[in-house]
Amino acid sequence: MMDAANGSRSAVAALRRQLDGVAGVAALDIDLRDDGSPLIRVQLDGTVPKEQVGREIRRRLAGGDPPESPDTGRRSGLGRGLSDILAADAEIEPPRQLKPPATVESHVRTPKLTLVAVEETVGGISVRAADSAGGLAFSPVEDQRSVNQAVVSAVGRLRRERPLPRLVGVEVREVSGAPALTVVLERADGRRAVGAALVDGGMPFTLGTAVWKALSD
Image 1 (cartoon, helix red, strand yellow):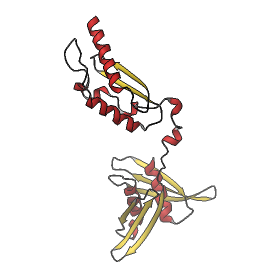
Image 2 (cartoon, rainbow, N blue to C red; image 1 turned 180 degrees about the vertical axis):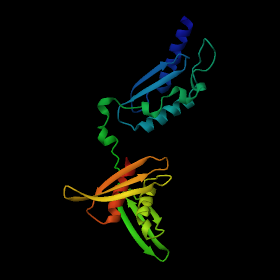
Image 3 (spheres, one colour; image 1 turned 30 degrees about the vertical axis):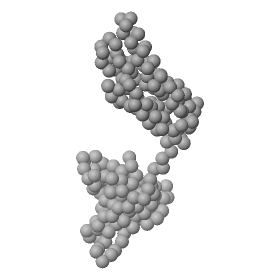
Image 4 (cartoon, rainbow, N blue to C red; image 1 turned 90 degrees about the vertical axis):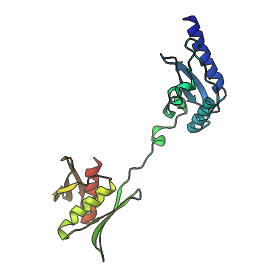
């Protein structure tokens, strides 16, 4: 038991020497799992991007000699694979006080519907829809009675709905003095989705906005 404990401490010490002096590292914590393989956790000091720190740690581990477990004679270092030794990049994080606010770190703008247009060309009538992320989708209008379904299909393509939803019903009703459009869609699995939008512009765009909201749920 004493030899095994000494061997474990030697393996940890060898890894510490191997990773000593990595730029951007504030603290290094090495634990041994029950099977004797090490798990490395790194705290950053915020001076170097975590991706660069991760690459340097992997480079050093890949280039160094793995420590041996004297009680078994088998490799307990890189012989077990980098993924077993080094925690994922998600665990290589700076200390809490050095982290930027979450609103800055994860600021991602949600796309919005920006265009719904019914166009007529030599090839026929189609609906064109676009969003604020640069997405663009088209849907042909089979006949004049299917314009609403074409709007649903075009917006569904923007939302990457597969298969495309089916228009069940659309209704415009006045609510507190303001006209509001409500749309009911049916997805391929039978589930229904509902969306609504105030009628403050053209009907195709109002319908498209209601469909966008229904598919965003």
